[in-house]
Image (cartoon, rainbow, N blue to C red; front, side):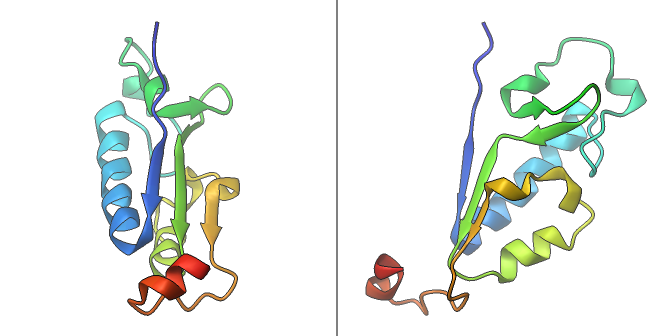
Amino acid sequence: MPREIITLQLGQCGNQIGFEFWKQLCAEHGISPEGIVEEFATEGTDRKDVFFYQADDEHYIPRAVLLDLEPRVIHSILNSPYAKLYNPENIYLSEHGGGAGNNWASGFSQ
């Protein structure tokens, strides 16, 4: 029975590493930056469903939640060729948009 894995990408570092992680998984499983399965990857059982959920016949979306207090990194992901890969409902940004300024108490209260 396949298991599903959900990734949590928290903050600048988590989102930057997570972005590279998803780029690599897409390359390994034959998924384009738009989330469409490439023609060469349609055969076989490589278990795409562990990290991705299938939105329709050919479109795969990462099982990922992206969170950040400062929008710069997530906006750079959303302006990359992989922007259509992610589900916008799984992206959470701070209402203030200024980050925590390396201040734990400020980040905790947000």
